[in-house]
Image (cartoon, each protein chain N blue to C red):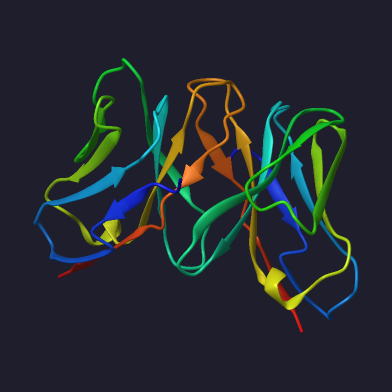
Length: 112
Length: 111
């Protein structure tokens, strides 16, 4: 499972509140990614990181920010949650081999 | 820019074969295939690189046609455990590893 954990696994929050999701990995992978998954859309990249303090936007980054202060942790923050951000969020890491990505167990977020 | 997968859904009997296609409008460097079961995370199946060889393990294999910007996943003699949603993820040149995923193909294998 590439040593990836996500927390929390489930969260219900209200519109307008800030939310932070955490991705933790134990195998020192350089690249980490945050995706959201919604019915009919597959997986869409939100942000990614290519090293400590090095991050960049993905295809659906509006309303999200990220931080990576340590190799093992990649945080995703919703500054002011909206109902459109209700989704399942997956973190992934990129292996050194041919670039395959391994996913964490996911966080189910509901914004009321 | 999202790759298009076909078919959207397929139902098989155990032992039957299936092909899932992934087509992109952009030049591709690599194609990744994943399987996801309901309520679980996507699981990596295989990656095909530009200029690389067709890959496969056991009864699941894949091909990559760089000129047509297409990849196909072949499932032979399907088993019940093959049920799930299959996603292709495509990457262009560059070393970021950024993937754009197709919308998925739902495969159901019945006894």
